[in-house]
Amino acid sequence: MRERILERFNQGDLARAYDLCQDGLQDSPGDIWLQHRAVLCLIRSGALERAANAYHDYRLAEVRHDEDCLAIGARLAKALTLETSGFEFARRARDSARKYADVHTRTGGHYPAVNAASMFMLAGEPGPAETYARQVLFGGFEGADGSAEQAYYRHASQAEAYLLLGDLSAARSTLRHAFRQDPDNHLAHATTLRQLRLLVGVLGLDADWLTELEPPRPTHFAGHIFGQGQGDGQLDPGQENRLRDVVDAMLSRHHVGPVHGALAAGSDIVIAEAALAHGCELNVVLPVPVPVFMAASVRPFGDAWVRRFEACLDRAEKVVELTTDRRILSAAALNFASLVAMGLARMRADVLATAPLQLLVAEAPGMEPVAGFGTLHDGEVWAGCGLEQVRIDYPGVRDPNPGKPLPAADLEPGFKPVMRAMLFLDIAGSSAVPDDRVPHFVQTVLKPLARCCDQLAEPAVHADSWGDGMFLAFETVEQAARAAEALRQAFVAINMRDLQLPTSLGLRIAGHLGPVHEGEDPLQKRPSLFGGQVAVAARIEAVTVPGSIFVSEAFAAALAMSSEAFRSEYVGQIRIDALMPEYRLYALRALPLNAAANLRRSRSARAAQSI
Picture (tube, rainbow, N blue to C red):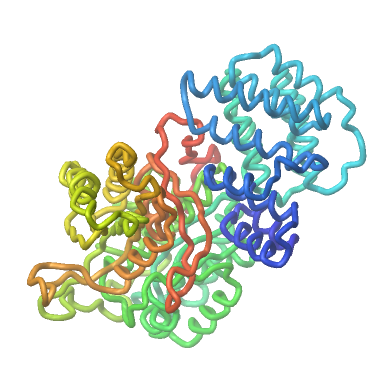
């Protein structure tokens, strides 16, 4: 169990690592290692309030014989520091530095010493920073290296200390040595790189030397469908082999890591096979269940592709089926799956402190018009976010109508498929309001929330209510996220005690993105939204912690491609309904745009190349 947790943790798959910790704690609820690692997963994913609650619930502050448990409280303070800016940043950095210094006094360890040094430097106090940096270098930490991870952190701490003392040459050579101690611990490398980038910025030093040590880059892939043979929409064996060779070269040249995309016949499968051969993790994101996708986008091009499709699926780390549709209903559904795959790659890159990449097999920009969906559309979306892209020239002549045509937009008279970002919200504990106070509750609690909805700069395109619940639908996830945060703040501003209402009342907000059917409600005789994705949004609301905004993975991934004003923090894999599969849920969190934790790398310093 521990080995599996460390494997996923080191690869930056914090969601899976956290879930495995929770599985282990079911059998061993007092296991300190599992408790500490679970809290660390939450901190690394940005779920700071939940990390603080878990730290308190596990009573890790009472563990006196373990330096990691002692330091995790200071680590929480450091994470909160990185979500602030200006005067508040300096104040919090100083508080975190003092906490680390206290741990160092207790244990004499290099880890709290180097963090005390760095946080003092970030707080604008170079004197104490240099004192603790020298403790790291000359404090007698030369014992046996122990595990590869312990050896890594020892040498990485020394590299950080050299940097704080202005010895850039020693910092560079020591950091390279640290990475060799634990070469596959990409998450640890990312944490170090993120901190060193902050420090070189404060010290006014060159940061380009850090680029060569970046973890493998999370990548979104896409490419044109093709069959095997000759003619439009087909490649002969020689053309496919040459394409595979170029893909293979690009994977190496651009330091590609986990890949995310669909698995249609042709380019998708060629890229996936090459990535697996390189040892890259494969994550498959499909708009429909596997059999439906295979029937539409794989089988029509030959049984050989079916066998290769199934072989890739067997080796995939994750397969996401976004809907239960029995056919691909629209271009929007295809774009939805692509957007989620792109967002997952970008979210993973944020965790690993590196720049995401997109690998396309397509014509050069401007050679073909961008369609409403498919590879060229995906390329436009990615490029529109300012993210790095590598294009490999498609070696054949593309079939203008690959596979089966998409159905007409109207599947049933009066109905049409649309993509909507949906919010469900209700007041937890409202049943505690005495009956005679219900009108007062409606006027003083529900009415301000309704007023907030009316005042949104981008109002909902659909709204409904019942009792203490509301349902809002928006055209984009960014609109929905801003609305959710506005409603959360509006509720926080309501003083229940002054209104003589139960102080236990709490607002729960849930968000989900997906394709739904828009048509007339037979009872209310007005437009409404229908479908399984509406039910998903409603069920998420039922498991949301009062005071929080919980969203689906699809919502979080799409938001990662459209806004830097929010962070989606992993909550866990939760069964939202007895008849539904488990869903990975995230807590939505608004961040100041200039916060240190909100700095993203959109491009690598490695030169972009295309063939």
